[in-house]
View 1 (cartoon, rainbow, N blue to C red):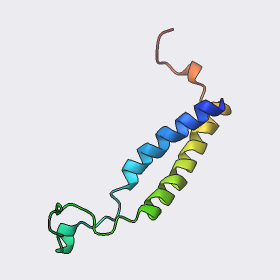
View 2: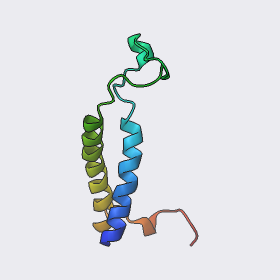
View 3: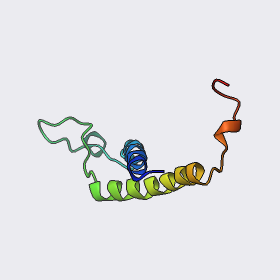
Length: 86
């Protein structure tokens, strides 16, 4: 696996995991009962960006390691799967 491909895969995994992690534990202004004027009630009270980015990076590293292992060490032999043209 080339460096460019590894970076591209990690980038895609990171963004996918970010959108999965983003809503975890978020409390909205509407839920807290303290809506700031001129903002939507669905706006978060405390976004916790550092926690979200750290958790996303950690989960992405694990997912990327699994993808790397499958591709580099050929844990799954994709040539023997009964899919695609023969």
